[in-house]
Length: 288
Length: 288
Image (cartoon, rainbow over all chains, first blue to last red):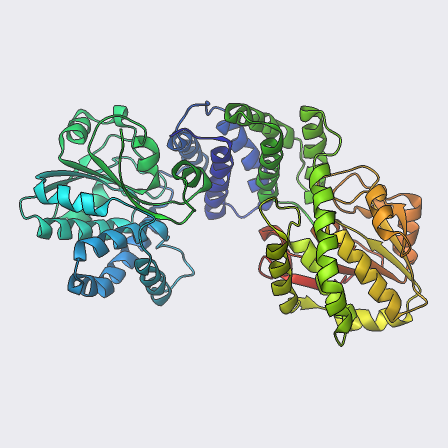
């Protein structure tokens, strides 16, 4: 999926969010934003949105001399997600189709920023409960379930910290639904934005799935850039689950892989592409 | 009021809105946005937000070889406002304090973009009716009313097309409340964004108020830059009414003038300044 001019503006807003973490002086933010504008001018027409992030974030890491910009927020998101799972797991297991609601929970985790400092546990609980009531805006879930029942190998490409705790639960439900299933989780070795890293994924997926390095340095997936192992699994697995908007941006429109996209539409650019409103929950099989 | 880094990003979004009017090619928008980034780098720290517009819009006018970027939209907004006034005038006149509700209507017109192409008459009617139900978030209305009863001269600095039709009605209500009142309307000679020009204001204010050129080339008011006549009226009038966010940005924090601000808070920067949420309706006396 190709980035458009709105993606450039979005990345300036992302830079401002990082500025607010590391700078107090408004004048300094003003001047630094101008230097980020120069950095973003390197982005070439035809790039995917996640490739703009690959230009922006290394520049920000250099600017503030940090390696993992959202390290704290990621930890807080995971903690909150564990608390939420503690409250939702039993209820979802009691539903008629726990697989369906576990998928919803995994997508709900993609919608809300579990690390928002001003939110307490009850607020997050209510937000998730609200989301669970809503149907998917695009749903190939029944087809997925059918394919899942016959599948053996699944490659699960995770997205952000926080929601990855719900991903684990969704994987557990998949494995209860099909006992023969072998799930491999792909994450990134190097941190970018709030994406879950291999180290973080290994901790959370322990006992449920093994974790591999996808080889990505973008906040999403560009298949050609994957490690040999990642590409082999991407094309050969019975099912590939692509979580979140960044992976969607990179994989949609590309050939190969039996991919299901699970995401919440977070911006106008993706909303226009899918022709749905921002906020839509999507469970969609990739068309060639 | 000083602009901050968010105002730079906002002006890029404003450029995109103009791009969408005049360009079809997404690649061209992408490249032109980069050239707008260069243009905005000329904005100096310490400027007011409206001074950034004064850098941006002349560049856009040159880019597309137009003199009045939103000419059509302004005409459509005025037409819609006349239709709305036809539906609201009688009701408001029947209320216990028509002055209060006429002020609300004038501020409601500031909140909604009356020229939004996808809105029909009934949608706009419902939106305005909803807004009229809401109280002011900041209100010095009672004090204004008291001052108005003793005033003779009023300088009314208008803001956008569309809402200016409601401004006329508010001025009529002021003059019915105090028959001795003389109201002079200040507008801009040169078009900028969707601000009402002198020519447009003269047509709408006919029979109610005379119109002067404020001398502004920014989408708001920077007192020092006014014509001699404007500055004289600003400092000598019994009351000055400053309509909209642009005039607020320019006048707040400056000395002199017995100013009441009527606006809807439209962005985070002004919301933070006033410590109220975006969307708040404000009727506020200027403090020195």
